[in-house]
Image (cartoon, rainbow, N blue to C red; front, side, top):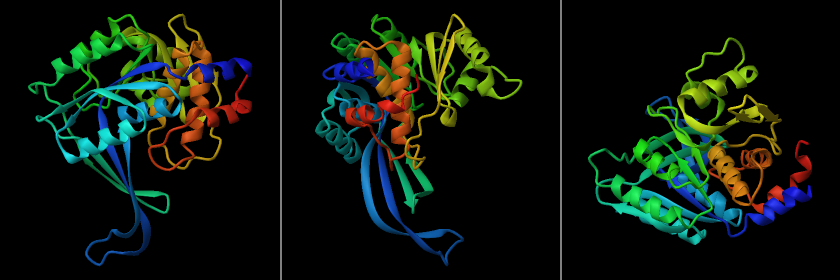
Length: 324
């Protein structure tokens, strides 16, 4: 495992640009002991509350916990949630110089109410960037300028209006390695070196209809994806089936699932995968070794509560679980 030890050590100080939709995740935890007399719904007695950066901001948090230097490019509103989100990122060591504050939008906030580890409901306040908002031009300029200082670029699309074709093309044209975490609702083709969808997203974005189990048709799904998108390699997360690296040549490599602690909460697991993949590539890892590390990281964070991150030490401790 010396090679993986070197990769983990090589993540330190690597600058990774994260461009995408940012949001504030608010968790309300409590207990349910009765049903409301007002409606047939559970009454949650709150025992704790916490805030965590979510979506692309969670990718940045994961990178920071790996010892990399995440550079955040996104947009927040001039509001309390945006200010709080920026403070959380800054305290974690995220470079927020590319975080644009706009009067034209409000910061996306998602509230998850959880009772005894079970999600009761999620409430969203979505801050959508519209075409008429004066935000995109600032984003293009900021992303292009900051990309020159970074080793790897990540584009994180959460369908809040920030990630459009022009932004994707701006990042792709820099010549830096670009990882795209796509959104199933995107109407435009993606461009980049890697795309990191889960299996359901890969099916939707490829347009392919499997004849049997999708897990058994990864090569067909990947080739259909490549026909629609200007992507060089496809990293598909397969939930309990692990992870796959698919190439345009037709090559498909798979690693078994690495759920090391049992599945507790899947919130943000995809963010962790793309963060570890990006940090590993920045450290000089091969695509397959980067995938294997990302697979281990995904297994770690689903065993944690909330929008979680993994650390270098956790990855190092779990290297013996790496599939050869």
